[in-house]
Amino acid sequence: MKDDDVPTRISVDREQARSWVEVAQSARIMRDLLTETPPAVDGSPFSIIDEELPQSCERWCRSYLSSALEHLGMWADFVAPPTFHPDTVVHRSSPVAWCHSVVPCGWVVVRR
Image (cartoon, rainbow, N blue to C red; front, side):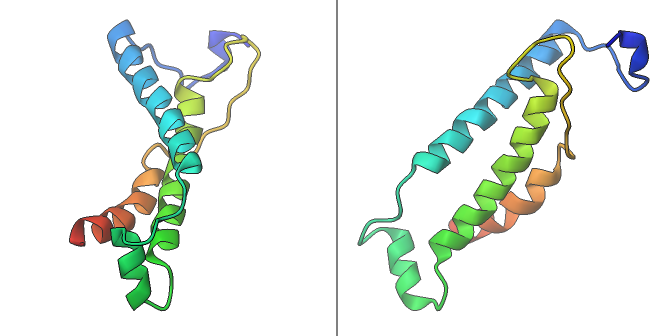
């Protein structure tokens, strides 16, 4: 694929690209951390909240965070693909789509 084949391609200076790569790598690390985080233990704030609710607040928040990190991961794969082969095709979603998932979860966590 040549640069001329992509009409929406814009040049990005090295410093800007570096900050995007940092965010992309952070998104991948956060996704892995969330995946490896075990369920809430007895006595933790989430387990206390869950006792008072018909649905698990922990599962609800985890599902929103997972969705947000999935969207951010798709953006990361577009901005800083894990492979750098010239013919690699990467599909992306909206870079701000993760906000729609993370905001409700953040509100719940901050409110407690």
